[in-house]
Image 1 (cartoon, rainbow, N blue to C red):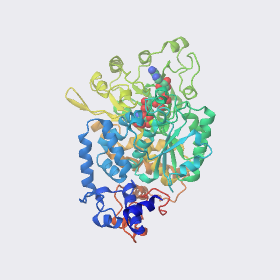
Image 2: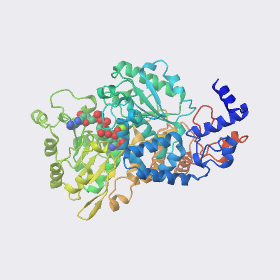
Image 3: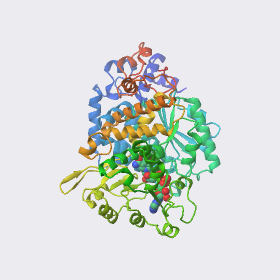
Image 4: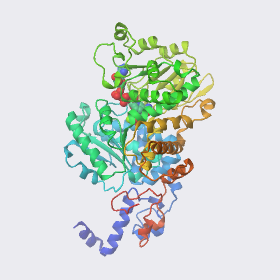
Length: 598
Ligand SMILES: NC(=O)c1ccc[n+]([C@@H]2O[C@H](COP(=O)([O-])OP(=O)(O)OC[C@H]3O[C@@H](n4cnc5c(N)ncnc54)[C@H](O)[C@@H]3O)[C@@H](O)[C@H]2O)c1
Ligand SMILES: O=C(O)C[C@H](O)C(=O)O
Ligand SMILES: [Mg+2]
């Protein structure tokens, strides 16, 4: 109907209208759009001449324009909006820009700005590129997922928005995190943008101010009870496997009343992992092992105090234990003796009053007398009692590592290890600049969010960024190539080991705990190879893979998406079929079921 009236209005033949619609569709589809980079021939052929300015630009001209627009904006949130607009209209250019300016762009599309973007998601909303699964879709989740018309998906990042960074329950606004992590999969892990899928499981929110916010876009109900939650999750996981058997599912920012049980429930049935528990464990243990080497104190002599005893902390102490056992040959029992956790009640101890949550039990101290255990309530009390050589922050409550604590650590420790790992920046346990200042440049620092350099006594100190973004893109990439049926913990341990080793001589010379972030693609490639090799060793790879590390590296390299526009033939009539072979082996430009099999 619409078509016919438009035909009459335009006075054109059906054929030319079709041609025009097809051309406009190419401009509208974020995977096929190349804006001013369409050649004159393509414009003519697609019937879009005049719908773009006359100039024909290269992708580098376009990058330059966006980069200057980016720099004209002062507020990070406005930069976020600019980039989201680009992601949603010209995905190739978004990633080409992102790869050129990784270091500048990450703090915008990822922590810390993505946190603000989630808080203001309703107010900022323009469009989405993921899927919302409401609890009311029970029984139809497969068909809701199929509405994406994606024939293949490699990576799904799914959240229910219940614990977004350290910002609490943000309900459906959590979609921003799934989108941000998916961007990292493409930028850092080289997954094709048409094969990542951000998902938001909207099972309500207990955030009252969101529920009464007129701009809130989620279901205005309280979080559903566990039975309903797991029914939705079970159906979701089964539907994903049925629709996209090659997909890796990453659980992201699920609150700790569910995240551990979810992992137990799904990790031996599906190709999935929890980023906050396992990804964080892998990245922090890698940095911690390097920090120990810098601190020049034998591993067995460290005392590790972790502030916060939630999902991230549990993953971190487990991973430090796994890595220490495999690297230093010490026993798990010995590692346990070196670990102290602090939660909102104080030191986590078997002797204190009240019941401990399940995930804390195995790390609870047995050696603190009951009266002491009940008295050690504040962080300062515990620090004095433990005299930690390493202090890790995963509490999500902001600055609690005080000047008093840092100065105290320097009285018995030549290089205190201080990791304020909570995100976003406002939730960090200490500003890295303060850690350097108060320790007179002695502290070894890694923060979850990026922080600037600091000068102390004329010397420049650069904090490392201990963020799971170093791990999940490579683990996901490796798993999409080896396709193990599940993701055992061993794959995370090798990822962590490879990350530790990649720092090499820069550890001493630059005092850095991780490779530079602008090398994230190389890091992910190496981690993917390590993951694939471990799949081979465990006999769980289900695809045909070469044995030699060099051949594996080449294979991974070939599989990584490069942000280039499809060539002219792709858009030209008559040649379309052959040209639909994508610019990279793995890339499906339209991202829909209509595209031919790659
Ligand atoms: N750097 C990274 O890569 C990374 C990865 C995952 C999580 N994180 C950050 O870690 C933080 C925690 O995440 P999580 O998943 O573990 O959350 P969580 O809710 O599971 O755990 C938070 C823990 O902090 C404790 N806590 C809260 N207030 C406290 C207080 N006043 N004193 C002592 N303990 C207190 C809670 O008891 C709980 O044990 C978040 O800010 C998150 O952004 C960082
Ligand atoms: O999202 C991040 O930056 C890291 C981590 O997954 C978090 O929850 O804080
Ligand atoms: Mg997270």
